[in-house]
Length: 202
Image: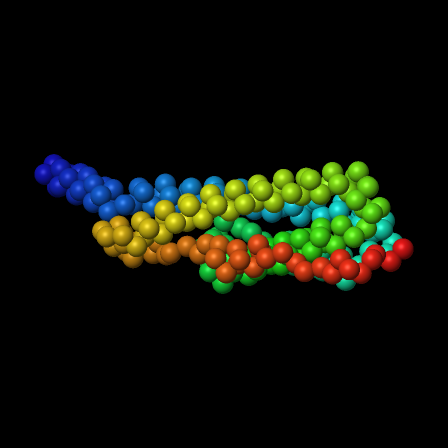
């Protein structure tokens, strides 16, 4: 009987200690990271699904720069070949690979949209302009989703680095999670350079 009381007391003490050292907070913040990541993936997939229709519309412009179109197709294939599983956010190398692939696709799409301004028929094509507007909306959703993910990861990583919760992190192997980098953001936000002095071939 006394032994049972000691076991109960020890269990309660263990629960209290874990709670006081951030165990429950780690569970909560980890779920927030997973939820935020799922939304990032969802919006990137939404963009990937738009691209075949955009490519089909651009192909109707027979003189369109094939190099620009090819880059978009190849960048999409590369980006969608990476399995964006929840475990990816715990693997810095895999996360960096995913981030770079999405960044390349963003750059390729940006260039395609800028180059399309040189083609009057595309500018007058309502289907293409509707797709362009939908893509712009999706890019905005991606930005919002990425920012929420960055915030969720920052909260988690702060807990993992802070005392005394860092002791819990070390004891239970709660590693620092990778996030989107400033360098990548700068590369994505740099607009492509297109020479508008050269008229489109017709």
